[in-house]
Image 1 (tube, rainbow over the protein chains, first blue to last red):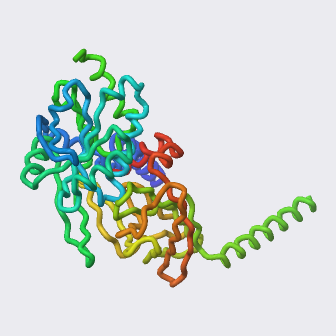
Image 2: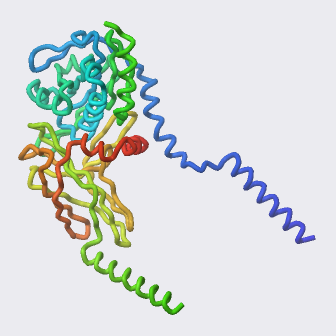
Amino acid sequence: MKSRALLIAIIAVMSALLVWLAFFWEPIAPKAVTKVQPHSQLQLATTPQGGDFTLQGKNGPVALADFRGKVVLIYFGYTFCPDVCPTSLSLMAQALSSLEPAQRERVQGIFISVDPERDTPERLKEYAPFFHPAIIGISGSQEQLAAVTKQYGASYMKQKPNAEGQYAVDHSSVTYVIDPDGKLAASLPHASTPQQISDAIRPLLTTSGK
Amino acid sequence: MRNYLRHTILLLGALTLSTAVFAAEGDFTVTDAYVRAVPPGTPTSLAFMTIKNSSDADRKLVKADSPVAKTVELHNHTNENGVMKMRQVKEIIVKAKGQAELKTGSYHVMLIDLKQTLKEGDTVPVMLTFDDGSTKKLELPVKMPQTVMKMDGDKAMDHSKMKH
């Protein structure tokens, strides 16, 4: 009788285990899944509108409207940035290099510095084309930058300087893809591959005859 | 059978010996290390690397030095809702029998106020100091980010994306 009770107990435990395995056990750590979510949440929550702007380059004002007929890639960053910006601009450069020459001529990269205190137009002219000749560097006043980052749903926040007065700037790392009509076509999250970037560019080049 | 036994003993002996030699050289091995090439006039760069700890204890990288920069700091990145935040850290833990990866979007040795432009093909001395006081001198190649990405391929980028 005792052994029968034991048997029932074992069966009950095994059944419970089976139920748990079937319905609750997640072989993939749930942590890995939740980590990805902030990206998509940011994308949906901000829904940037994009739109025209005019900022300052080394050779005078640069407007988004100057590049009608071209696909424009916009990235907000700062040149003091040692990792995130060079990584993003290198990925953009590789995407540009992967295009056919005729396509590449119709794509313009724009690096917008959110750190105009240190990033002068001269400095930006040295910096951006280093990654690819089709990328220019521009910036503007704090008011202009506040307006353009708001249009695109980008954010930045200057951090406390160190003993030497050098500071980091927290910033969103997104590559914005603008179609030949000047409309925001896509916002590519940080670390998008050259393939993902060029995949976003190509359809925009074929659909517009302008 | 006897032959087999002898081989096993020889192999064990060799293993013990090699471990001993390795330990004498230090508990740390550094691989995939490089300094990033930067555009002319850029005040900052960084060093990436993988540090392996062969010892049985968790250890910490507490300091890095390089003659090419006025200030050298240990930094980490966090991605908070798509905003990349770079912060100085006191130390980088290298787990027992484990490794620490200093890579894009994560930890790095930050070189601040560069005294020279770092071009691809240059070599930069970097010295690491660990919590036990031991040091490791490295001569790191300077590489363009594109060069490194091409070597790693798209797989590596996908991997780094997974982390965020």
